Image 1 (cartoon, rainbow, N blue to C red):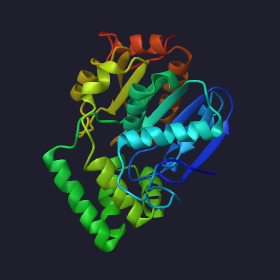
Image 2 (cartoon, one colour):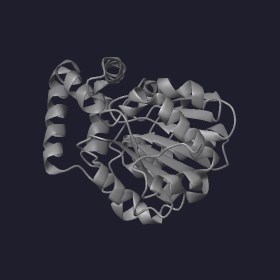
Image 3 (tube, one colour):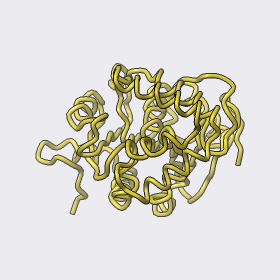
Amino acid sequence: MDVPTRLGPLNVRVTGAGPVAVLWHSLFVDSTTWREVEGPLAGERRLVLVDGPGHGPNPPPARRFTLDDCAGAAADVLDHLGVADPVDWVGNAWGGHVGLRFAATRPARCRSVAAIGTPVHALGAADRRRSRLLVALYRLFGAGPVVGLLTKALVGSDAHAAEVVGAAFRRAGRRGMVTAIESISLRRPDLTPELPSIGVPTLLSTGQNDPMWTVADARAAAALLPRGALVVLPGAGHVGPLFAAPAEVVELLRAFWRQPDEVVARASSPSTNAWRPST
């Protein structure tokens, strides 16, 4: 369905039953990247899967936008659906940024946040140059020259994941995608200062070998969260865990939703380097 928001109509899909969980995808892709985990999670929650502005079938945004705009658009979606109770937020990369801002600015509407592959710092100079080059190539030639580089960065060498990611990138309109990249990648703020203000249980995750979101950086960020922890998941790139370890992602989220503070405490234990289910 198309839902009217402050950023224009956004494609939203609702599936499952129970308390609401909002799923917001990474930059460059769309909600199809949840397909490996969507079915099992729908047995636990009423999933609200949002295609962000400039992505999927959405029309191009009328202007550049911010994370605050995205968090507001998510609130617009929930208002349209009549959701008043606090939601569990699951975000991948960009979606994690939106979720952290949503929790920081609307604490009464958020029960928990799981941010998968979500670096909280702003882009460094080298990454900013690469993003500007990608935008220039994409403006001139479309997806063809950049999709291979993009899929490698997001999911590594996983051929199936690369196919899903590449199709999602090609599906978006060029003008809307460029606006989104300029808004959310090149202008991404440093979220580190607001982590201490996020009072809900929060899980950050990264892969063991993600150069843009190292385990050390992610652990330092998690330490700033009053009720937060780091989880290290298999899979390369920011989107990789959704394809390399869907069963582990599902198990983690199910446990987190049922006992959020207990899972945070287990993940924070100095005796473990990654979350493990209780036995």
